[in-house]
Length: 220
Image 1 (cartoon, one colour):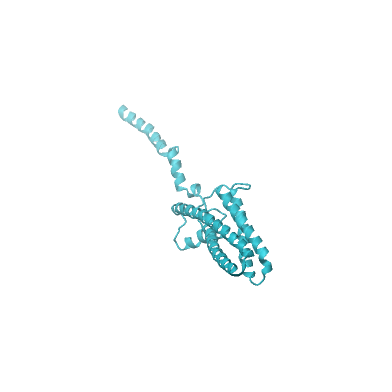
Image 2 (cartoon, rainbow, N blue to C red):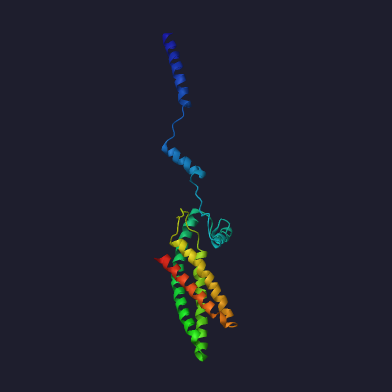
């Protein structure tokens, strides 16, 4: 009888202890926290594209750009890593063609200066050479610009305040692009109005100066 009562007493003690163990909540570990962050997309998700892009970049590489909609460049981390390599290649080519275009500007300036005082056959020969070099410069200039304007957007980073070489390069690009358009328009009108020659020359020199400065600031 005493043995039976002792067994019942032990069971009563063991029962509440067992119930307490089953309802106890374990403290979260570091591993649990890491797993929670992995599954919580809102905690780790980062935008893949910068908010501000050139309109040409947005047209091709934006979240609803042509390359996204066609599936050629899906917007994900792996694709963005490849795009950054493409961006680097395009910008290096942009710099190389910039020097080629600059050399073309120099040749065009020399021919143009000689053309102003040329007469007869010399005038015809220099004019043809001037026009041929002008066409080549226009092609290289347009290609140089497109390599920059259509390159994939950069990584999202903190924008530097104040004036720096990149911003100055962009400001100068606006100047030489405007000058380039003006130079070509005036070149076509000179044949009908020779009084526009000084304006054509001024626009050409302005374009060359701004373009040369843009190349220098981005390189050095």
